[in-house]
Image 1 (tube, helix red, strand yellow):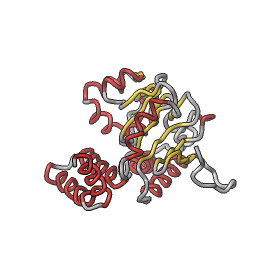
Image 2: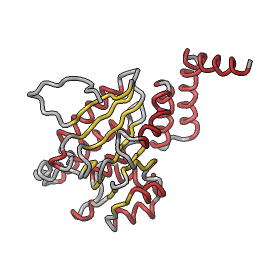
Image 3: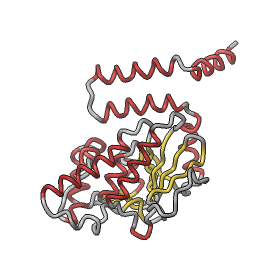
Image 4: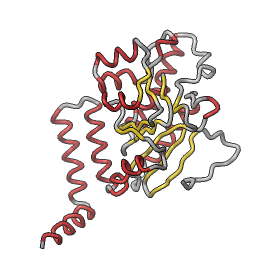
Length: 266
């Protein structure tokens, strides 16, 4: 993979950005020595990177992963959060972190989480803030916040209950289960199991259709996904659909694809 841009050495860099294919941005939480723990500066850097990338009209999708093979992200950084000691500080922390994860939820292009390792606690919330999850065979997803005598904090509770339903979500949270890849796939927590790493055939097969899909089409699909995630009513969701159909229908890419299909039938 080629590095997307150089960063001054004096600037703390927690998010590594690479672009292995045109319009495919891979972001890596680069704190393997800390199990990719999500300190507040890490989340702020991630949010800023995602929001800046979302302004690119050529961007097709983002893949988010963690450094190493043990952890996608091991949750909040307890050292960073040690000073959160009163109710005002708790709400400020929640708002700040939830805003960072909202950068992924509201990103105008699809965001895929590649779970290179375990996603636990706040790391699981980060994974569910993404649109899809591609889970390595050895990776697990766990809402283990109850082990610290707390509940979820960063919008990951609503995400989990919406995705797997109340019974499974409660089961995962109350029993602090670590859900393996095959079970996650069966439950809809994961969208694919990756058996041969980020450079392997499984990842290539999953991302190949995205690499050939026009960016404006992927934006239209993501807009509908966001409408559904936000619980918009049928009419409001339909207006989102109509807006993006008009944009994509009138685009040159649509007419080129239509002409190519018609020429095959002539």
